[in-house]
Structures are given as structure tokens and as C-alpha cells.
Length: 512
Ligand SMILES: *Cc1c(COP(=O)(O)O)cnc(C)c1O
Image (cartoon, rainbow, N blue to C red; front, top):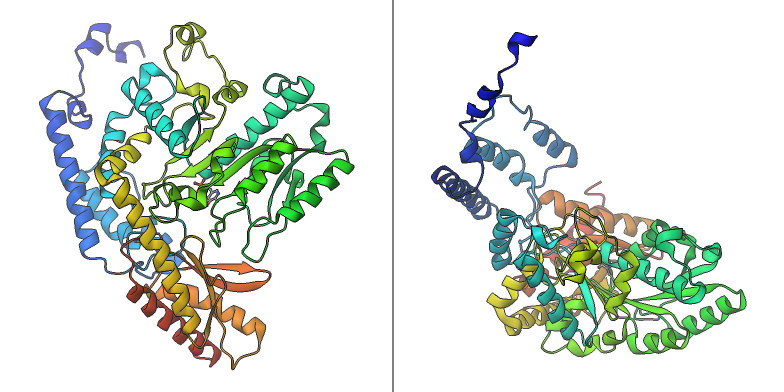
């Protein structure tokens, strides 16, 4: 089809007339299109928030699926942003979980701060990538300074280092990865990065409490050690790792000639917010030559607390720390960090790609953060945390967090006073409250379990509240995770009343 091919000069002359208004750049069309787009989104979201008084509109999963399908097809010619946003509004926004609602209190899922939302706009527009300096320039230094600040705040000394991550899953994975590789190098001169797992790998063990996050196990499996390499330590009456059991398990492992190389302490367990005895665990880890990783995805925010930061004592003894900012630091997803006491540990994951981070650059002192991450292309999430901290200040930040801790205590007290409800953690360590509907007049255990599960679902369907459910030793429980500093005790009381009513209705056969 020779005659159909454009001649070379035509390609150069051809320019796509619509392109300038599709990108943000110095030209007038780009600037104008950007402003219009931002205004449209601003209006759509404002309309959504103003008109959405519930935590959820209440549609069943299948109905939501149908609504979303109605957004198709994708046309050949394209449409205006305004039209697309209008459809998004009806099919998607209306069926979203309203996370900033004061009765959206299910998970470690926070309302995002407005300064962070502002920063997000800059993060995505600038689109810096944190892997190499020539894709980020100033952003690299800002992240480095934020990491320095965080290391200092957690009590780490000179030589500590870290990286921003996608969250606790990645941070825990990195902690265990470095722990594994450091152990193999130290004991057997074995380079896992180059040679894979050593012959002794089947005897490597990770220790954590029964209440530790499931990502300890998933990390173990991804690290080629298998979930069975994770040895679970019992917890005490407050759901903290039991040091006595840790002693015993360590002795047992030694006897079986196994190699415990990592101990994971949790600072803020997912269900109860419990904090493991960090100092005692650090001591045992040191005596046994084990890497101590503290998973403070949730509890790391105690850092800013005015009245409860003492609960973090001992965290500075950890070899590495996980902290999430998309939980109690009120950042939009995703935003987390991984910190390590000895920054040289990152050598275990160094990789030089000639196109990205050549050795010469390192020699010249040009920082390429890809050397400290398991990601390559990476968002500039440090900016939103920085902007939030600068705007709000550490004092108000701490006040907000402390308010939620007190609210949790007040909620636990209220539940204790109610006839048909019982609270499992009477003194919440952070802001998670675990309780259940358990009327004296009904002894049918399975029926009460069902009632609790149903209560959670009915609250969602009615759009009255988004709360969580969990199961502890085969018993169904309900859970509040009180991250939102706008939630009041009145919000809690009205949910509790409804919980009792729904439970009663079910037991009496009113709902199925
Ligand atoms: C949330 C959480 C994680 C997982 O973190 P993501 O940010 O969801 O990846 C790990 N550990 C604890 C204790 C958590 O609360």
C-alpha cells in the first residue's frame, strides 16, 4: 500500500490539534484546561459531600456492580470531562464509602486531611518519580529530609535511614527481607541476593505474636521461607506478646537446631491496638542475635501524641520500623515508611541499572532512592505528609490523635453500661473498641453470633454506620476503629442504640 503511506515531510507537519489542551504545560491551552478540570472536580466533589449525609448509600453489592457497568462503553470519539464526571457522580461517587463520615468507623481507614489533598494535586501534577535523581531532583531531597526527621522522631541515631513505601505490607516485607539477608550474610557469608536461599533456609524462623498482622506470614511466603517458618507466640490478657512464651519458644527452637532470625513486635495490633512489650523483646532479640522489626503501622502515630507517646518507649531499639501514614496520620492512600537503624543494611537490595542509577553517580554523590526501595517508579508521597505536618503543626496533630484515644475509652465505658452489649477491651490501648451484642435472655451461641454478623451488615445496608466485624476464638464481635477526630460520643451512642435494636429484632425473628 505504498501510496497510502504519508511522505516523511507530512509527518512533521502534522500536529494533533487537541493535544495542547490535554497536558499541563506553559502554553495557554494547557493552563486553561487544567484550571477548568480542577474546577469541575472541585464542584463535583463539593456537590457530592454536601448531598451525602450517610456513610454509605446502602445498595447491595450486585446493584453497585450494575451501576458501575453502566459507565461503559468507552467511545471512540471521547467526551467532555464534564459529561464523564456527571456519570461518575451518579454511578460511582453515590456508591462510594463515605470515609470522612463520622460514622464510618470500621477499619484503619482514615479521613484524609485537606492539606494532604492539596499536596496530592501537586504530587500527581508534578509526577516526580522517586527512583532516580534525574526524575525527581528536589523531591529526592525532600523525601530524604522527611526520613531524617522520622528517624529522629523515633529516637534513631545517626546512621539510620529509610524510604517511603506503599504501606505496611511493603514495609513489613522489607524488614523481613533485610533481616533474612543480613542473617545469612553474617552467619554463613551467604549472599541471598546473588545466590538465592542458602541450604539452611528450611531452618530459618520468624517469631511474632498470635495477633501480629497477617503480612508477616505473607512476607515469609514471598521470601521463600514459607508461612510455616513463622512461629506464633501466645498473647497475654491484653493481647500483647507474652515474653515468657517467647523465652520458651526460643529455647525450643535452639534445641531443635532451628535459626530464629527475626522477631516482629507489633505496636498497635489491628483488632485491639495492643502494643507488645518493646523493651523486653529488644533485650531478648539482642541476646539471641535476632533482628527486631517493629510493626508500628497503626501505633506509630503515638509519635505525635501529647499524652500517650510514652507507649512508644523502646521502639528506638528496633532494627527496623514500619509506620503507615494512611492510617492515624490522616494521609490519602497510599503513604507509609520503612525505617532501619543501620542504613547500610540497604546494601542487600542495591542494584545498579546502567540506565537508571549508574555506579559513577553514586561515587559523585548523586542520590538515587531506587537503592533503598523494592519499587522502581515511585510516588512522591513524602510531600503530602510534609505539607500536612507543616500546616497543622505537631501540637494540633497530637491533640487530634489523643482525642480519638479518649473517645475510644468513652465508647468502651458506654458499652459497659449497656444491658445487652459487652466490651472485650475495657481499656482500649489506642482507638479500637471490640464488643458484641450479647443479651442475657438468649443463650443460643450460634444465634447470637449470627445476630452480630447481621447487625454489621444491616447498619451498612441502612447506611447508618460502617463498622467492622471480627471473630475471636470462634466468637463473632463488632469493632469500632475510631480514627476520625470529628466523631463524637453522640455518634457512638446512636450507633450503639441501633446495634441493640437490630440485635433484638433478629433474635425475635424480625429480620433474617
Ligand atoms: C494496616 C497494617 C498493615 C498493612 O499495611 P498496609 O498499609 O495496609 O499495607 C500491617 N500491619 C499492621 C499492624 C497494620 O495495621
